[in-house]
Amino acid sequence: MASPVPASFATFVTNAQTYIRQAYSSAPISYPEFTTTVTTKTEVYLDGWIGRMPKGREWLGPRVVYEPAAQTFSRSVLPWELTYGFDRFFSDDDQYGVYYPKLQDLALQAARLPEFQMRDFLEASGAYASTASQLGLDGVSFFNTAHPVNLYNSGAGTYVNDFTGGVAVGSSTVGGALSAAAFGSVAEYMMTIKAEDGERMGVTPDLLIIPPPLMGCAEYILKNAFSAPQTWDTFGSLGTQVGASDNIYRRYGVRYLINHYLASNTKWYVADTTKAVKPLRWVQHTAPVFVQRVTENDPVVFDNHSFLWGWWARGVAIPSYAWLIARSAP
Image 1 (cartoon, rainbow, N blue to C red):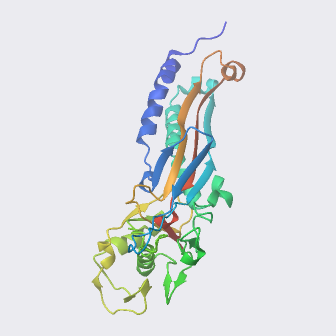
Image 2 (image 1 turned 90 degrees about the horizontal axis):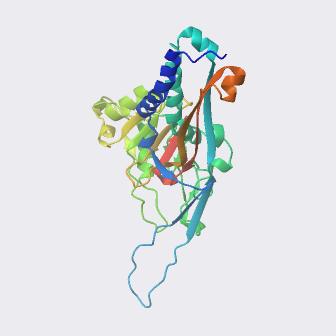
Image 3 (image 1 turned 90 degrees about the vertical axis):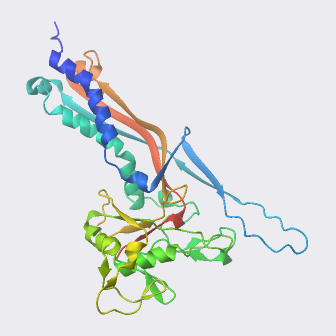
């Protein structure tokens, strides 16, 4: 005759979902700061948009009709899962003291799923390491030194949102390793990016995203009352200044966000999160679904004396508009 499930374990099973829900809802996450979540019910997420209308023209002669050029972008939704199991005999002997934290961690990892996916997209790693998965809305890699301003008019020029190593713009170098001059040059360059109509986009950088090792530098740039900066010119600086002066960067209205999940210790990002759509998007098909296999007649319990908890979800990280974010590094 099979031994009954101990009362204490029955209580554990009853309470497990409560602990999972509590941990899931309390998980610290940062991705909503720079990510817009959209939903889909199809296997392939399809997005469509049109470029900016040209500015008004002086009415001379007949009207000029502009037909919007529709543009599309698609990305397949990806499946995700995480499963936690343990031997029921161990749980019988342990009196279940070590398993609550593990179930809470299972829930935390579910809540962090978009966090890790947005990180992997930013750093071109994991499921987003391929060239195809890194393509932006304009058909080139999301971080690039030559984004087309107008897909249908190459004469409109290009713009940059990847300043790794420092990029020459006129007589100045924009970006490079994080410093006051590098930050200022990237932020100021972003504000000059033009749209199809030849007018500036109105980019408003308001968020500096950094890994933990750059916290001190970010504090100095954005919060220090005084600094001894270099003298400024367009997109940067050309000389040095003796003595401290008021730190103008702290008046830019930019805050910094420490992303603890970034793998690189040197890459940093400047983003505009003031628009209706943020720089990245998380396409959610199915939020994490939690399942437990703990009944006596479940095959894994009956055949292998194992208990399983797990979740599954469907979603994918995709880019928004490239002009909303820039990256830089040494």
